[in-house]
Image (cartoon, rainbow over all chains, first blue to last red; front, side, top):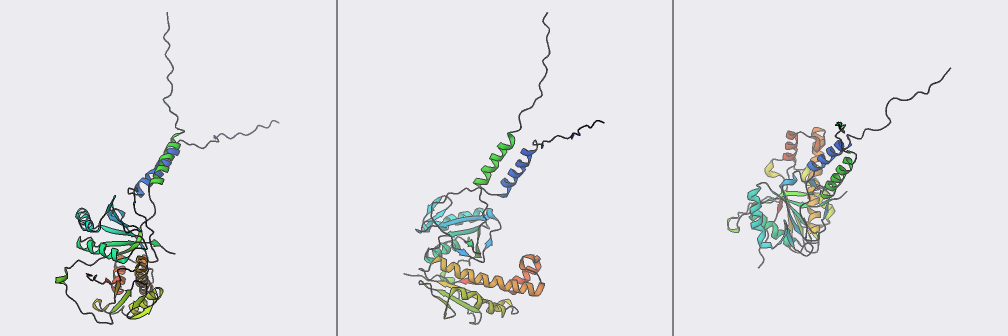
Length: 137
Length: 178
């Protein structure tokens, strides 16, 4: 009797032709789910830590004010003076009425400066603020 | 005679093998240029700006008010008693709990006042303590009343929790220094 070797009829390769499609899907997911890092930061700061932090739910509403360790203030791509803040923020509020101002302040700043900034924000009527802090666990 | 041989048409293919690599590169580019880290922080709404001449002082009964003072050296005064920052949430929680069933006009007001030279980090720790106190009492109330955590509540239930454990944080109007 003759024994015949059984041979599998299916091919032993993984079809890779759909690989680009899968990766494109991944790519699209990342493009949709993330926002581009668009700003360069000129000031040096270390954020404080806090326990009861919340996430900012809508990132597109956020406008940042950075305050660095040498009390320099940055808005958008410029270092600004304290007295300019009111006008800049007022203009921002006109464009985006429900703007959230995120204060990214170095933890060794003096409160005097923060109070000054806050007073200007109040005058500009951009009153929704967020003290940026890292989550502490 | 020359026979015109029809050339056999080759299948119109291109090598798609490297396509995956190209898309991977694109993917990597997006991974690098985007920031996935979510912004976290303590959010609040500042009070409206009222010019000094239009300001009216509304008297507040002292049992509603918790006044927290932080001076330049980092000493904390809560209702005229010296305490340490991590104690704030415990003291506040008790006061908040006792006011759950009172009407909105009698809820607790937490006032934070700092010196111009106070360190920002200390202020954040203080504010954090206040936030923790309110958050934890809300969590307790939610579990006690609805048997759910705050994040699982429906909108209406959440509104009720927020109204019962009502958060008022006030910042003292900065004083003019000449």
